[in-house]
Length: 170
Ligand code: NI
Image (cartoon, rainbow, N blue to C red; front, side, top):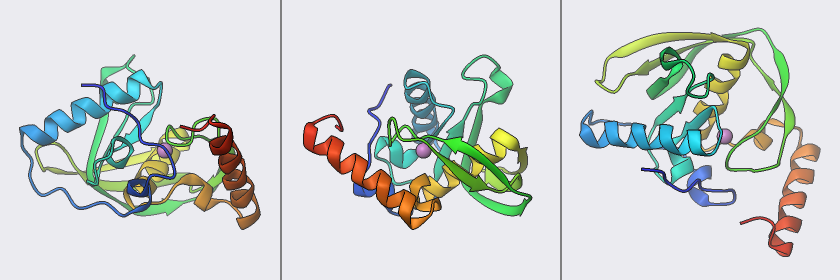
């Protein structure tokens, strides 16, 4: 089922999520809904708070549905290692039309459970490393403008407030 994407400033996007403790059909349905909603919105990653669910789960598919092997579900993920540095433009489905260059680690290793609760280690570099960091930030209640300088962040928030006033931001 396609669920509506929650936009900033909804408080659910700014709160740390709760650990997933039950690996059941409800969780599998949630993951399937997250993929469907992400594909519909043309995203490559989506975290549960972005559909209004405060749980520690995120889905990623850099191939945008073209390669079934690239569908990743990360339950209770944690970054266990990071190295290097990359600077690339980033966007977010919860902040439409906002883009900016964000400094991230170039390579990360993530420890996460799958939908059956089995722990796995995943490694990513470049875009995948960026997606891991962006989505795990969501699970900690952090949006990408919070990774920018105070000045850039204030400019973005001011731009959003302006769009809210004119009704362009829904
Ligand atoms: Ni995002």
